[in-house]
Length: 164
Image (cartoon, rainbow, N blue to C red; front, side, top):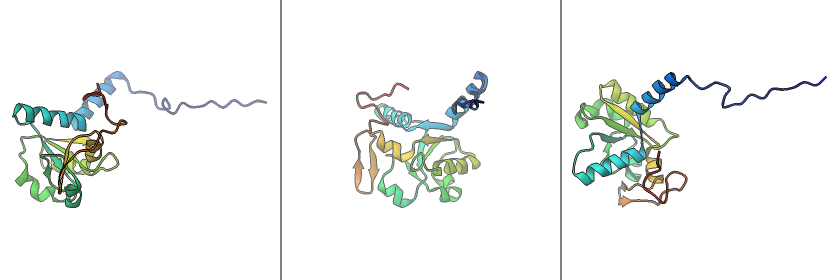
């Protein structure tokens, strides 16, 4: 007797959500997240036009991490200090985009939660500081301005826009 084993496709083991549920999910996701490329583009455009970008970028890491490098113009407010200092440093009417080290760290999520609990409008920057640097955007350190070449696995080398 031959036994046939049916292989389960791991991608389709749980079927895709119906389109209406997918629309709700992905729309909600975009309300909570921005990627480093969009943040950089918005900051660059605002600077070129001499206008406010309409949001503030918040680095939620430690002072030692901040000194290693941070997004230019970001506000430094470690997550542990949000409860006592956010009100002094931020305007509730201006959306805040939080970031931490990178996709392997949930510090930006914790910071976003702490800010939302205080009534701030908030998004999390996907990729964090790691992808800011890997995509070739300029950053500031305690020694001055820095920039690394874009990693071809994270950003197109021949254009400024990945097309997504």
